Length: 97
Length: 94
Image (cartoon, rainbow over all chains, first blue to last red; front, side, top):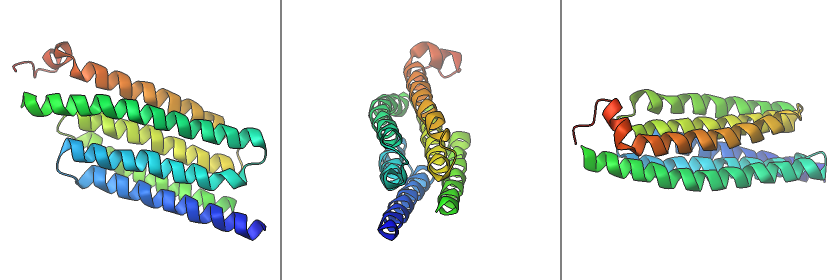
């Protein structure tokens, strides 16, 4: 049983790290501000989401698991709001040049 | 298992540091905000991985960092859009 839990953790955490890699490479390589924003939100939501999803079975008690989920929801909401504002700044930046 | 999570934390930290290149090169304010937000989320991810590995207090630190990085990025985004800021940054000619 514990092997299954460890396998779940390893699989989810390292797929989360992979999405972080994809998001960071996208942030560095993409030509335009808005495409970078697209890559960044992948790294944010999916990378951190999968890492938290992988860490859930490792939680010692229920409160720790709830804290992990609260962090994930906070980053999701913050990411959504910040992405809207960043897209507005990127749009203004494009039209400004 | 704990050292495996430690290695994942090291990888995510390296990726977040690489993301800071965008902060250096970013042509506009939008790219710098994105790098700042990636830094916040990446830092929170590293702290979570370390926290689940053994140092359970790091999870509360990650919660605080995630909260603060949200406000930092939001404030930066709001003030970068203002004409006054663009004036101050010497790009107010449009």
